[in-house]
Length: 99
Image (cartoon, rainbow, N blue to C red):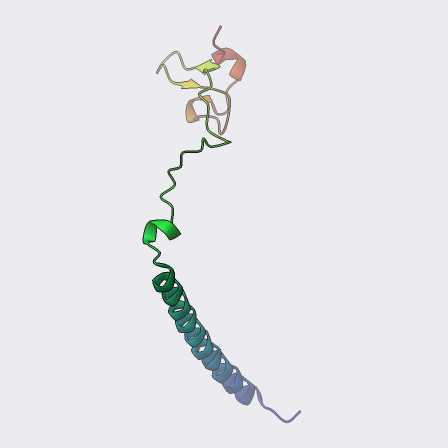
């Protein structure tokens, strides 16, 4: 193994550059193919990328949960789900339970 460190680093740099070139070529080819398919099938942007609105109801839709805890000073409430609010951190939750 007669390669010096400098020679190996130069080879790596050359390989990295060649990899970037091939990736750019592959990307351009993929874009060309996609544009060809879009044109061939008459697709529009909303056919490909949904806006997130759908007539189907989301299976995991959020439901409003009643508050379990209330800060008497500010009136802030917390349901007990998720990250505890700042006003409740380090304190006994029992003191803030809503009756």
